[in-house]
Image (tube, rainbow, N blue to C red; front, side, top):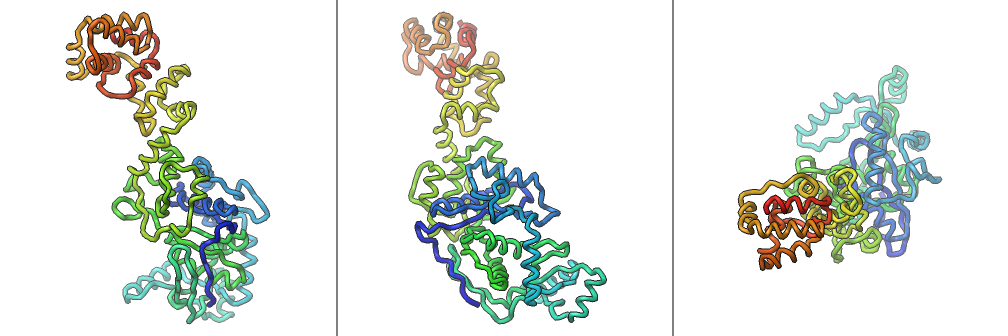
Length: 477
């Protein structure tokens, strides 16, 4: 069989890429990275990026998953040139609406004798697989229905015996292609076995619909997980039999946890939704994903446009990419620090007290932003700043006792005059006690917040409701 070249795209040569999720669950971090890499490659070459929903599995596909996946992609900032919500002449972009095309192409294969009906039951196939494994052979279809006579096939079909449609894999050939990541690949057709292209319920199987759609949508380059690498020879066989042009393929390393095992729920959060709900920012997630399995000399938080300019398929690695939440937190910290004031208030909005005025919200946000990675970490400080009198731990109570009533009398009097202006309060205490440095400021912090450490005290005071600072200081006078 002829080799399918998959050389890296030339700089400036536009490519058409796609992301094709199945709506059977949430958008996994690994799938989000696949979408990101394909969009970056399209943008880097001034090409096109498509979104296709592969929902032919009617039992598992749900529209609510489609809507959720699209929402997650949009939240990340990933946009497509055509998709289920942005149709063009190559659509529709839901496979469930492309049945007529699949039927036409399957009919081409049937006329060419490239496919045949298979009447084997799931139980029979399972037993055959077990027998092969027990004999030390790789499991593959044994060809039970391959040579049934036309009369026997017609008899079973007329009787209503359920049948899949299998592709007749040619014997004694090699399927070769050059993978964008893994280099030259060669597969013996005799190791593949005839595979299903149409399920018993009449819907197109993945091997078939995925390959046919890529060709008909004009996709020229596909980046996908390396778990699809062994699917590629099957899909090249299909496209060759149909006379359709295959895309170039690149199979990227899968995401694994810190222990080297495939990323799963036992490692913690694995979906975009979970990180979104915890308060992670899309910029942080994108910057971490960009560097998982893809090396770059660039440091610091990058925009999508900067990532697109820096993305290089030659820098895609073959080793498993380890997802590290600690590294994600590094990007999160930088992304939080870059938030504009209005965006920061919105990010903390879920923990701020209802009805809080804009000035107090802004002051509180400015104080907390350098000290938190996630909004939930600000919740204790909401109670400290806006709640009742803070309780003092023994060490904190000793700091207050050592300062003495005179210290707090001066502080409370200054707060009564100047409200929550820390320099005025501290200046009055300094004049009354002669204290400086930590001896001056630590008792104020402890009395006002109940804690010896925390966000900038001046900003916290500006966020406090009127009179609260004087009340907290006066109780120790």
